[in-house]
Image (cartoon, rainbow, N blue to C red; front, side, top):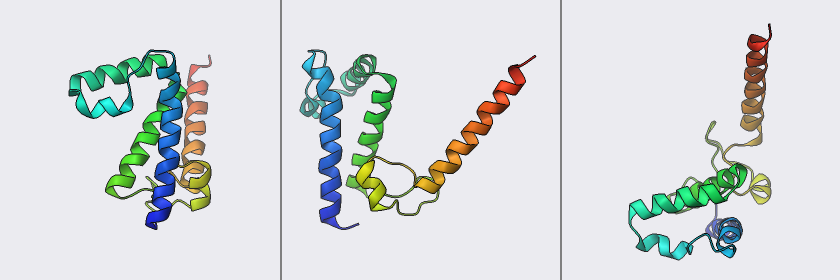
Length: 126
């Protein structure tokens, strides 16, 4: 992926991160993201636990996905499907810049998950 596209996605991901974390900080329950680099690992873990407690489960999951995507931009590998290791189409990344899977693999994962859920239901029924 070209550098200018990566920069665009990085800015978009940073914006999403600020939006998520900003809601917690607005309520006076968080610390600034810039301070994270200056505090010890224990304090960072405590911050993560506090932030996780302040965010709904879905928002926490989204934040972690955003952070993973930002890390992938830094080290390389952004926009690569975690399952098939093919490029995720840019159109998908435009909609969901922290996508971990291409649509085909995601569909397979969801299908398998649905089948697993059905098996659990059948084993619980008398």
